[in-house]
Image (cartoon, rainbow, N blue to C red; front, side, top):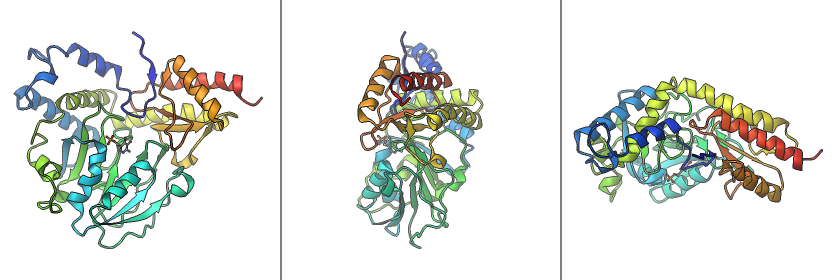
Length: 362
Ligand SMILES: *Cc1c(COP(=O)(O)O)cnc(C)c1O
């Protein structure tokens, strides 16, 4: 078996223990005589899978009782429309633009009402998080929207914006379960699970109950109403059953590791291995402002597109895969999600040192 260290931004690395367990259960899930892929989502067996998965997530994140957990489809991108369709009572919302994903959400929001950009870091190619301590949010805005960890650029908010009493909506796709959060600080926390949790095809939405409206904007399809899924406990129609099952395994893996505080400590230790090296390297530079660095997505470059290309190719040959940066940033990106062991990051840094010795300035 030749598994590589997979630094992909998403779909991304999963814990090996989880994959092995799933392999063992592939043909016969706990004596049911069938795979989870083959069973009815209305069966007792699946019902217990989804219930336990939700219970474990609630335990991991200490989700208050007045928040619903929804397992949906359509990717994080579908939420860009679903959020305004459900929340835009006044047809107004405020957006903070810190990268491609928040920009896309903002553009989508325009289809439903008056959206205001209240802060942006576009002026420096999204290499920092703007000051959000005193935003000029329209009084009657229905929500303030943010993307908490910017997968493409490698920045993360170290402190939540002051929403001034407005509902805070956060896309946490690439930092989901990477550290503890206070769920009650948010109206909605949501993310596609294919970054830091499970296989593509599942979106988890954690929403405060009173935000689930009886009436959405006119014309909202049944499937895009939070109410539909909240009332049916995520079983209104066939859910992404196998993906939910794998998410459940990852939740158990995280609980076994000690929960999110432990994960945060491990993630900090892991990221420090790479950032400490970048800070003293004469060849590689980190792309973002130090105080806004992400623990999950680390972006860096040599300053020469040719050397960057060579680095990505040679790293792949050495078993360090998917290090190419996103096209709007260039250079490299190492996604070091929960499931990436510290050995993978250490091996990457060793490889970078060798590369620097060969190609760096003396
Ligand atoms: C990947 C990503 C998305 C898009 O997710 P899809 O599931 O492909 O729609 C949105 N937001 C963030 C922060 C992401 O990293």
